Length: 272
Image (cartoon, one colour):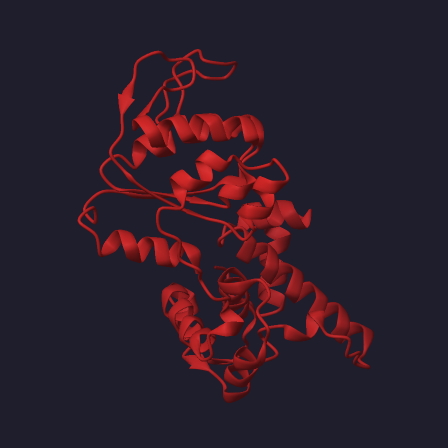
């Protein structure tokens, strides 16, 4: 939801022809975050065999989206503040000032006011960022949006072999509307991706969305059926988390790629 809004702001702005560059600050190890943001020069550290442009520099002329800004380490916040104030950066290991003209959009699921009170987020950085604040209601607070987004994600994913999926069964639409979506849009997108792999028919059903995995309802079933369901769910999750990369999915499942192919054929699952 946050990135979709940030991208919409970019697309509708005068910077639309520039790059939209997004980075999830919580997903990058602290030791790598500075290099990811600011780039580095050749020889700046062990393994830096060539100069690399960072995300901030990539966004020059466009929009930089910093997701989960509340997770940025305190020391890194000082460097971000300097960039926002002076609109100039230096690559790691470099001394040449690089001017940057980019819109900066940030987002977080945390309460930055609380983080400031706890001394974990700089007050000056907060006020530099908070020139305009938009609160995005959770998916559960936006009736009807979950179904609209589910259809959007299905169209986006419905390519190649996944084109066999024509839409959602009525029970799936009801389940999507009623689910609390504590993981918001990211959870919805992941469930739709898994469902396109799990679905046996041309329509995604409520069972394909696997909502029962978090419920307390226990079903009596044969061991073989339970094993197959567990295998299918684990395979679908691994493929979804690796964006369709079967080699990476096989590594996550601790099986060989040929074995993964055999399981996909056995269970009649799509290979993408």
